[in-house]
Amino acid sequence: MEEIVLVDLRAQYQDLKEEIDKELQEVFATASFIGGPRVEAFEEEFARFCGLAACAGVSSGTDALALGLSALEMPPDAKVLVPANTFIATASAVCQAGGQPVFVDVEENGFLIDLADAERKAKNAWAILAVDLYGQGVDGKRLLDFAQSYNLLFLEDAAQAHGAKVHNQPVGHYAKWAAFSFYPGKNLGAAGDAGALCSNDPEVVQRVKLLRNHGCPTKYHSEILGGNFRLDSLQAGILRIKLKYLEQWNQKRRFLASLYHQYLQDCPKLQLPTTLPGREHVFHLYVVRTPVRDKLLQFLHSQKIFAGLHYPVALPLQKCFAYLGHKEGDFPVAERLAKEILSLPLHPYLSEKQVEYISDKITSFLKSA
Image 1 (tube, rainbow, N blue to C red):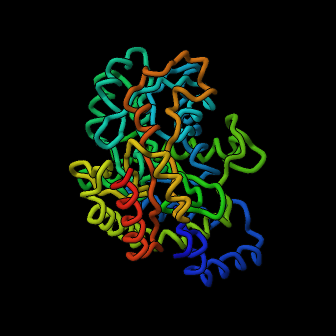
Image 2: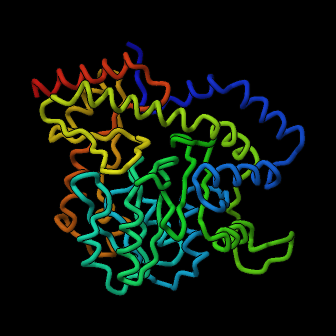
Image 3: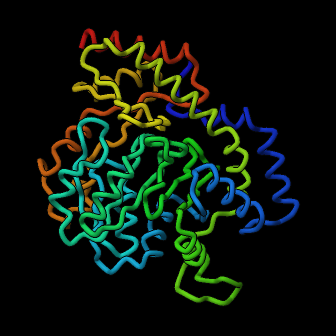
């Protein structure tokens, strides 16, 4: 069998080639590259898709997080609770905006932020920034109740959860804002870096729109200090095309995840991902656990099955956060996950036959491991 990649963006482009090429030609023909009707249309459409009041398109998911914090006028060195198992942008954006990440361990079941550990660290914190990890949303109502009980803001990193729901509510519904990434490999991906901040508070979104464009409501007139964090028209046009297919793609991801469950449920030495109660998972990643992760990963690569690691190092133990003084053992669950988790190929263009083939290879290897 030919190589099986984690995410097949070439297949996606071939499927949408006619629409995308036409859109690019129109952008170049009109020379409308920065802002304009394409960006505005995407913001309206994505906000509607998310079930939130307003959206600001920006240059990346990382910038969406940092701008969201700045828009709320986060005090210098403010402490923000963040999970220990996530992509580094969740924490680095806090630093970028002038705050200090306070790392919180995650739950064994679902890998989301552990509120019991958060409770021990909530004193003197300013906000809790929870992550909808791998396509599964946090319980927004529970997070909001927790945040209010400690006088914190509840913010949501939804970079991996476009279209996910919790108890029939879209991710971001209870948060002050939700930040999204459109990195190419995401469920909704651009042709480069892009992101968005969505909120039910239009004033927050409007302030982000100022911050992304040098603080200018009109050209050459800056009301506040900002920067260049704009979503360009090329990316907005491509995202508008892909947004039409996102729900269909998410359904395909759920179907393929169910096949993995079916084929791997009795596989030894393998723990399958858990869908928590009330969740509509969008399976940005299909993440399993095994005590022989490194050996299995090496074997799969030898079979041209390109699984991935999300993530191989718990954030508090990253070298860039050494100044915080954390040591091995401080975040036991996140540290165990870093040694055991493995992301299997999953994307809308993966075939049922490929899922069965991958599952057979995994089962055969683990039975003899």
